[in-house]
Length: 365
Image (tube, rainbow, N blue to C red; front, side, top):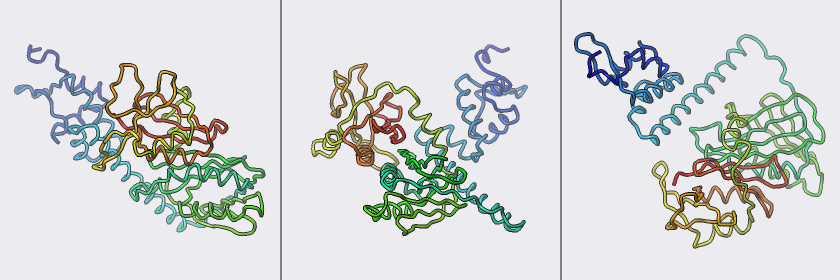
């Protein structure tokens, strides 16, 4: 092997290291996506550097999820923030395509013949518990029309109750209400935000009349009734993210810090005129970032923008408005904030309710 090629990888070696085939590497060379470091002028052999292994693996991953070649080329050359935007845009296309496919398959099924009758699930719930669960998650519902699966509340109906879940990608909230009576199989429906808001108002009107709320799910039809008055709606035709996986990936089982929080005191500090913040920008929009830290006793504190940091100081950036929303939604005078590090999601929990919590994504400082 000539000296000039020492330290370089052949196309076969890069194929094995990246997961791309040799023919795929030749294609991405011709497309200008992954150009070899050197091409032998006599033999035409392609040679690659070790630094090209990571971009090749990125190309392999993007190829597996069906990203168009021009966007793959842009991702290989872009900064991480721009790559994340490309991934978000591609994911939205995939979600839209899946929703379109579901609608088309549903139309095809009607051409084939009538579907089997939809199973009906009925729950009797505490009106107060259901209202509390709605309040705990409603703040996390998204409003982005490009992410339609985030614009509702997932109603995950279990044999002994219902779990409510909402997320807008930057925060996720989960709460649960136990059933006093249940009939029918488990069901999962994505309830529109407007339907959830009507239900919440209905639950208030039942105060002093009845302690119970009745939930019925039949196919895509949802109904909640209190004292003879009912709110009905149709489920959104979108796949809600796998929140079990999101929760496991976000907070795990053993957070490094579990910090007791005085809800009123922290909310007052965040709303105060002198609340310390750090200016950041996300997608061209300025954000006032709240920086959380711990004092020498392990208590939570707000960190000023000019405070020097010791090597072992914990500093976690978070959207202060989102944190306020989570505090207000959680309710209760005392909460627990779980912190795992500067780039790990934060979890806010009720100390008396392991089924109710919210997760906030951190902001890099």
